[in-house]
Length: 298
Ligand SMILES: Nc1ncnc2c1ncn2[C@@H]1O[C@H](COP(=O)(O)OP(=O)(O)O)[C@@H](O)[C@H]1O
Ligand SMILES: [Mg+2]
Image 1 (cartoon, rainbow, N blue to C red):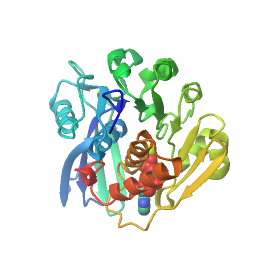
Image 2: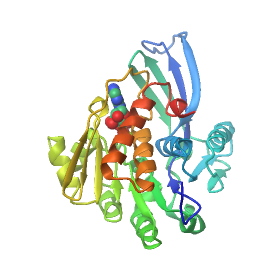
Image 3: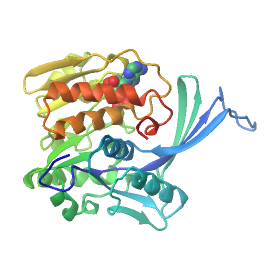
Image 4: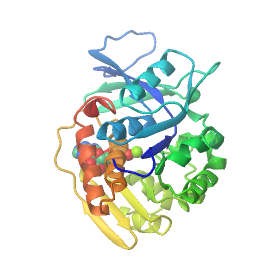
């Protein structure tokens, strides 16, 4: 991508490993079950986003924290394999890298997360030097990044002052509090990427159009992801609807992060919001066709 700064996107957020266990209908204490398949893959909304954006062709760096352990090494290796600059990825001793175990049976899945290093990132862990060389800052899984909440608005403000555009994907809020300083950050956010449920919870609206309308008062562009229905985007008074083509769905892990990556890849090339929305849906469609969040982009 042509640019006056060497880095297209600096991603700040959580990185972890996902262990996908397939073919188990039900887990029971005191019993051992045999799985049909298992895959260890890159997890974490922010790191999946970084991986897929790099694979689309952007120059990407990742600022985050993992443990100085096997899973931390794995995460770093996967990001590097995709071409992501990991100089701002810290390997912290005495911390365990986060791990999610997904048990899947058909389209259904149940997850257990050990958060470990996932919530540790603070705004001071995002190096100024990296910000100054980037055109864009993206944060994924805002609600999981509890240590970032107090400094996030100032970080986004600084990024915009330095000439970067900014984007944020909040993902689900496990605390069900649905704020944690988010509205303050949205003041300095150019593109906001909630999914339908998140948009409804954030606004208290019952209908997604209204929710998108409310959110668009807070940010320049809001792209609400609607799963099999594609997306609606509100951009400065305009409403853009892009349906999703019917897809053969293998696994929806990382669909939203892939949407964000597709959208931003296009947006950073200077394309129209319509084209970016279409590219988001195309990347989401691509993601659901393979197991895990990144396999479709490898
Ligand atoms: N079941 C599905 N069928 C077809 N496309 C899908 C499906 N689920 C997700 N997608 C694609 O991935 C995009 C993002 O998925 P979505 O589930 O809405 O986001 P999130 O993962 O953040 O909840 C959608 O806009 C769509 O393009
Ligand atoms: Mg999401």
